Length: 447
Ligand SMILES: NC(=O)CC[C@H](N)C(=O)O
Picture 1 (cartoon, rainbow, N blue to C red):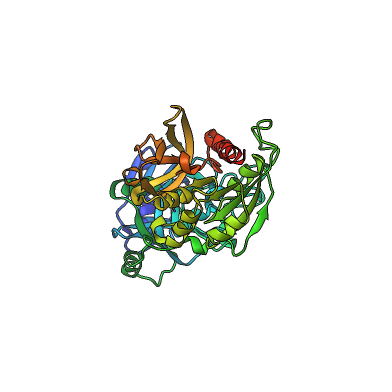
Picture 2: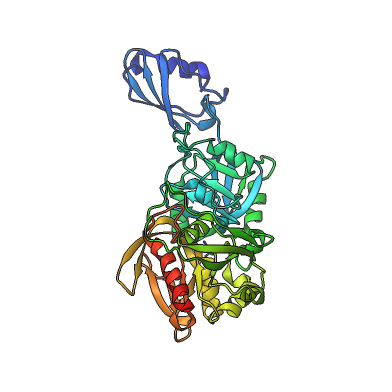
């Protein structure tokens, strides 16, 4: 059908009150020009235009996406998943081609803290909250000095920012850090696919010269299991940390210890808020690289040792497990996420890869000792198998969504660990008291 015929059809008297008009694919022109009397309201999907004409009639026109002239960008990026599915999207941030594991995160807020969480190295984060970018970015919400993740996948990119702390847009922020982002993609459908089939590797590309088959091959041949990712995100040399939570955000003003406990914090990809919360609880912290020997740590005679969060497969970093083995039983220790998994292995237990993991700020966790339920922030794809743990190790917390192990203690070894994030950032603060528990563990060991 030629464009002229389409115009005639649209403006014909018969159609003035029409509610729906279906167009066959245009053969001669690739642009559909609507007659003046039709003001296009919006493009509700790539195939649907809603309109209102000057006579008060309104309705919907269906057309093939590349036959409609639109004032905004058409899809210029592809996400090719290892199952062969291809998702067309629009790009923002950096351009290029990137491979990674796709995980979905159910947090409603905190995208900047998620982007700077080093535990996402090697992964694309898909936000299930459809509206992202509305609060822009600011200098205070950084959880590390860099974005280590592979890319960001969102449904809708906010066209404006509104927040009193905002100093820039999400798009500019990602472009500056060379991180790819895509939007206008069906994030619900991808999430359902991941929930059904488990984690999938994907390739994001804005490069038209790469074929779908080429990108699929790239996705299929890439591996994340068995790869040491912590060495790529850890610091190079030890450093001191002394920054507390900013007084504006501090919510437990009077309860913190005034004693100073010296904590050595192993940086497997540590989030700043773990360091801030420990400092607020009265700790003096020395952060050390992932390869820092246990003997050097013990020489410093710390009051306690923290094993941090970090990306990737805990079974792929035997050197870190050896370090943990060399320290537990000698000083009080606290493990968070990757740190918890390494402790599990150091005790002789096993870790396994979950179907699609836990990522989000709304996971219920039960403390089996008190019966208390916390809503927690989580970000992990692996878990400790409690059945593999030796006698003396106790499961202290379980995730109420799937009963997986969410916390461990070994009182004789003065050891505690959590699979989730008591420091939140982003997420609820319910489990903040765990930092106090660690301080109590160090206190009891001192007297
Ligand atoms: N946040 C973390 O420390 C993640 C732990 C580990 N890399 C996992 O995915 O299970």
